[in-house]
Length: 277
Image (tube, rainbow, N blue to C red):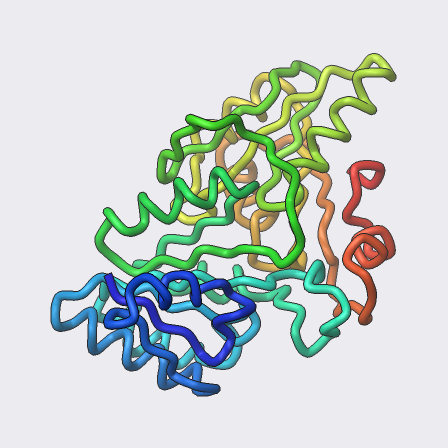
């Protein structure tokens, strides 16, 4: 395993790997496009490569390199991007990765994973390391509540039903899973029995669990820290429209960039809370 970074090691925490394995860590400087090309070269020579930087740089800045160097040849490179969504907060609009999932899901051959907490993240990284092909793993900046116990095992391409319910379903990923569980508690006090599904693998999508939820509950809300276009909501809606058309609602960033501010304040301002769900 080789790890690459783009001059953000103290923020992405890859410096811990660099300290333990200095001969297998390379800082590529502020050259994200070049980092992807280097990763491709290393992977072509038989290495398993993890490349890390902020999500906005890992997507928008080097999309051409992702397409040409990783997607087309299907090379064994894992992009682990931190500081995604608007919860990066005060770094502002320039650093808010809110279209990254749409970009990565459009790339043939890429597996896209959005873990819900630290435990699922650790498990997803292990699975990515053991699975050949290009990956995008999307992480956040702030501390995230744990929704899984120790001993949880991540299964690629499979959703997890966090809570059973018969009246409606909330499908979420990433930081929105904890908020979906909180929303379920609020609804339970109102007599509404809400199913909560964590969809950690955005691509390939667990279509079976979506169709089952649509059939059994009759209503789905999709919650994500991403634009309305091209993310979890779009992908779930495609399945529902094809297999089991039902009422759907979407909790997301709509079609707007966000201001600079504290993470919790931004999530509240742009409607990404349990109350909004």
